[in-house]
Length: 133
Image (cartoon, rainbow, N blue to C red; front, top):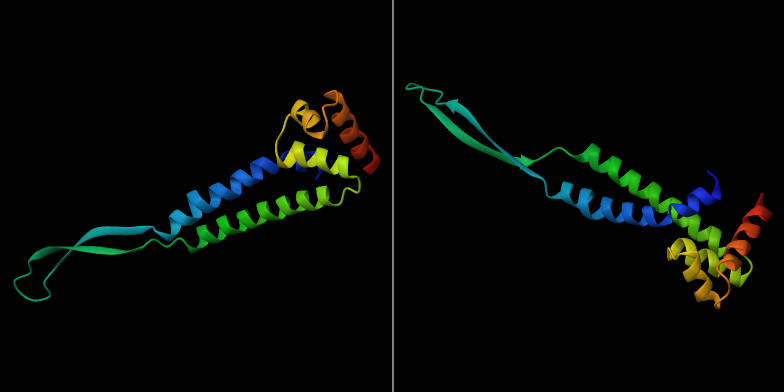
C-alpha cells in the first residue's frame, strides 16, 4: 500500500478500532436470546404448555471475525506510528505527527512548527516522501 494512502487512514483506523471494541465486540458478549416453545405432558392428559427458553446467542464466529478486523486495524496503526517514528529529522517527524496523527490542517501544522507559510510544512512533507521513492 502506498505510504500516503496509509498515513491518511490513521484517524479512521483509530475510530474503527474504537467502534469495533465498544459498539460491536462488547455488545456480542452480552447478547442473550430467549424464545417461547410449546410442548405437552408426556402422559395423559396431553395438555399443551408453553415454556420460555433462554441462553446466549452463538456469536463465536462473528466475534472472531470482528476481533481479527480490529487486530488488522491496530497493525496498520502501528505501521503508521513506526513510519513516523523512523523519520530522522525532528521537524519533518513533527510535521507528519501533526498532520496525520493529530489530524491538523496544513495551516495549523505551519503554526505549530513555528509560524511559517502554510506551504512550508507541505514542501518538507512532499520532499521527504519524494526522497523515499
